[in-house]
Image 1 (cartoon, one colour):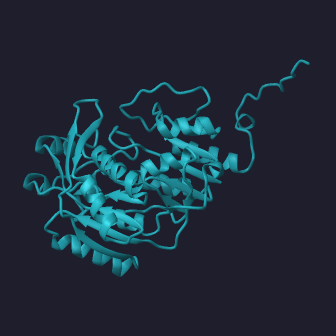
Image 2 (cartoon, helix red, strand yellow):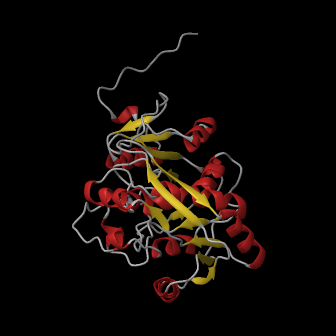
Image 3 (cartoon, one colour):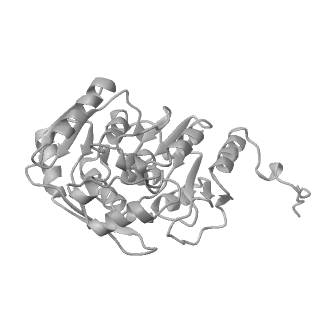
Length: 331
């Protein structure tokens, strides 16, 4: 079975809406399928990434295009990763890339951008989605496509976020304020370079945010124990599938999503007749109406059971009680 798992960023998902806190879920779902296709937000935890070995790490806009039948995903043994940074490159960034080369066997090099990539994150307030703005991304695309050969692109640039917003998130929780702008930048760049892309999680030079050292919700802890926030995307991009001949949307057996969250990938699956499982426990700030065809489960443990049943060819109705009498269709 080939399963797609999505947890959109910037919408306050209870599971996977913070800092790679969906890694255990990915491990669980990966254990009951042949291939688990996921996007970076599911497993990115700054310097931590525990995605299962049978997962495919696919940037969000490429994942949308894949489900819409526009592109296929080609499995690879490894990618040459280009890491782009704003000037000047910092020692911790060099050390992070060197560490990935020494431990992952990654082929990577760092490039300083001629034109800085400027990213601003903001929150729309209590109960609202995160947002942001990105500038300089076209210059980034022109530079890397004109001057360099690479298979995947890692972006490690700072995200400006209001100090009060950032500290309030760490102390009180809510919607991750910088998650949405990371996805925005990745989608803009990926749409032009047509290759795997990921932006490193929260990065800032704000001294108050950098020095924040209180006990936080475990879901946020990976960001507070990280130094460079970069290793998660280097690990993900190392073997991220490229666009090319390989697995297609026709090979997908199911999509798993938070509840009341309906967007482009869901519509693509509905059009293709791909079953969708919605997880009630994974609430977000969204309240989108869901089609009746969605399979509603309480949590990811139950979702894993549904996948096992699908893999065994068992109808879900046959596993529930009471079991109704067989329908007789009139002629």
